[in-house]
Amino acid sequence: MADRLGFEHIWTAEAYGSDALTPLAWWGAATQNVKLGTSIMQMSARTPAATAMAAMTMDHLSGGRFIAGIGASGPQVVEGWYGQPYSRPLERTREYVNIMRQIFAREDTVGFEGKHFQLPFPHGTGLGKSLKSTVHPYREDIPIYLAAEGPKNVALSAEICDGWLPLFFAPKDNQFYKDALQSGMDAGGRNNWDDFEIAAMCSLIPGADVDDCANKIRPMLALYVGGMGAKGKNFHFDVFVRMGFEAECDKIQQLYLSGNKAEAIAAVPLEMCEAVALLGPPSKIKDELALWEESVVNTLLISGPPQLLEFAADLVS
Image (cartoon, rainbow, N blue to C red; front, side, top):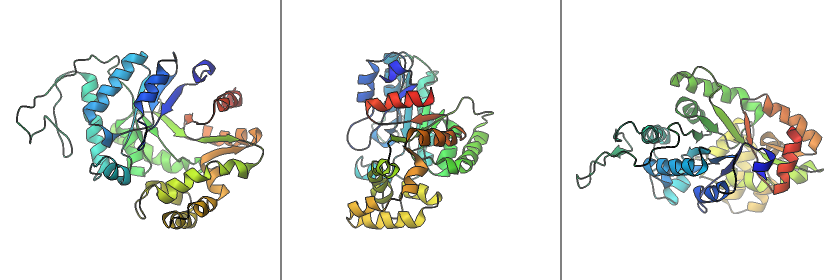
């Protein structure tokens, strides 16, 4: 339906259950036009070479429709699920993308000497050798998008990647993110914004009662603010604090971490939901959509049942 209605992309994600690539390949086989993006492949789940191989394979199978969305995730998942170190995620991301770019370019055998990744591995049998992919990429410039929330990581996306994937973007914080992105573009020598995509996830929930619509995303916000990470080390929490919801976030986190999840969900204020989502009657949604259109965001990633696609298509037609 997304393909038929003219949507630009479809995206899949992974946390600690389903992987992102398998369902995207399944849906990619049944579509012709939509781009296929991962939002996100977690870097700790795969070596840079494995991610590059998957990207090249998906790009071939789809005829050049793949977008490699990657992200560092957080220490809870990286260390608890994957058993990998989380230290210095920005430095690790920079090395990771460098290796992926080398593999895509296929100009020479791949060698890298970084603080986090070394190719060939120097502490093994001594038999490792620099290699070049046996597969010629369908495109040497497969786009890489970075999921980021903190200002330094957002800047890094604009410096070394082709797009930014914000999870909780609020149009009222547009200048904060615009400044972070511009600093990254300056560092990377990028002269304009035309070749950089900002694809923001946005819950789109139409309905007559705004608060009832908000109830559909309160559990997610309570989970991310209250339970996705540890106290004092939760990047999602920090995003909403920057929006001005520090007292509310403290209460949600305290309730969630003490096991009172229902109360934590009820403590998510309507204003917090409306800051990052489009909720309520179609006329209200259309009015608020203008704020997103005026921001740095140029793509909205929406999720929901199939009928939401028809609603969204009518909304922007």
